[in-house]
Length: 116
Image (cartoon, helix red, strand yellow):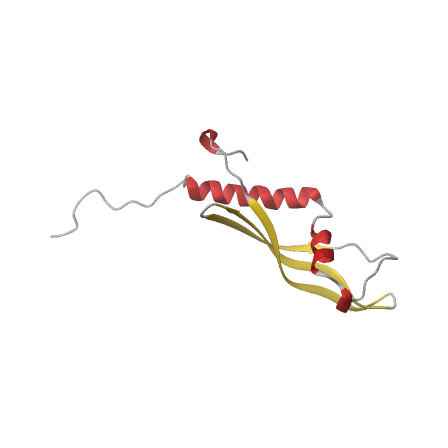
């Protein structure tokens, strides 16, 4: 979805990781992350859009890292494994911000006096 009325906006996107869902034991490994529960957020000036998401992960390979040794940067890398998914989140955020700038609907007071 593009910006309406020819406007130009810059949105700064970021991830907030809430928690991770794990298999306590899988294929001889402990605490295998299967899903990252997170928030994708975008900020443009005073406007902010968010998408709550759960990103499923493929089974671990030879590069398995024990849960207690995972770093934030490593998990953030997992969240970007599917560019189509990320683009979908970003599109939702952009639409949310555009709707804040140019609301598609508004609530107006009645055009008459309700006093007596």
